[in-house]
Length: 278
Length: 198
Image (cartoon, rainbow over all chains, first blue to last red; front, side, top):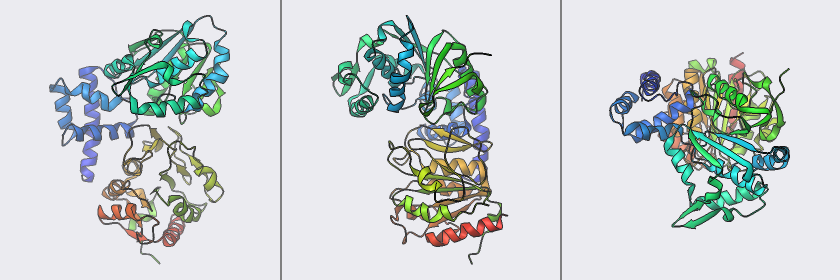
């Protein structure tokens, strides 16, 4: 690729993102450019296209292409209990405060294939809170949501999940929550009863419920500052008075327009609390 | 004295990648960067994914420049050394500002050198210096090629001297580079560079 091709790529990227918005109403215009570019480069090669223009042609005219492309643009491969310290902090520092509520609502925003949602559900079950809890799990990718709803993970991922779970201050064995069969682990239906999976875009949709805690980890890194501000604004609006927001371990509200609307609750694990308005 | 390419006086960004043997190699280079350097320095060092990064602690004590672990959306400050955090890719975005991603591994690595170098080449173009050091992995070869394509300056540690030569050798196979030097002379070049940029 020459320098001129690189410059053409940037133009084609903008056109493709506009085309996707106009045709399918998925809005990637506020995504962080550098990682979007990287993802589209991978997608272009996997779809066997020479250029993003060629990919755009496919996206507009071949109905099978866009759902497949959406996976490249959105699916995060996460782990259950990723960053065990985060879950340990929820357990030790936030759960005692949550116990004071008669009923609880949670929002896992950008839940992808569900690893984080099941982690939260298991933690709540262990802490005796799941029976009065409802977890909203949202994502823009319906294919990922369907996978999340199925609650089925490859069995070879389970040892890693188990180790993370243990380090999160587990009060039970992860194996209490799944049945292994045919190389897969199927998570317990009784967890799913407390989870509502739904299609929701942080870029274009609005708030749908009041919740005590929003967990949105490693999603904001894919957004530019404007879109981050929009998303954090939604979280702020959704949170009850003194509600909690957990974000990824390398994310920060420091550069956000809403930085002043939250206070640090567990600084090292990026758990914030909605500030009282002056 | 090393003959320097013409655009070296305009370097605003330095990207450095290393794998096996990298902590030692960085220890020969980063402390050589003088406090007056105005370029920002971005480092990817392959490390076990789950261990909290001790790099910032290790290098803060050795370096004249401030050393930080990269945070998402942080605006780049000149004369600062940024390390990619473990288990995240580090990218440069408009501004320039730092950007992280948890996307799939590249060359079995996250952070990946290719990911950093390619995005830095986009932001800095000819104002970028790319350096590939010791390592037992091919990560960085495509990234250094991207730096060259955008007119940046390219430098590779002499493979014969590298603790593990595969990474520098792979980078050299991708095309011509401006310098192939042992660590000691890389450090000398960086000192010269800082002098000329004043």
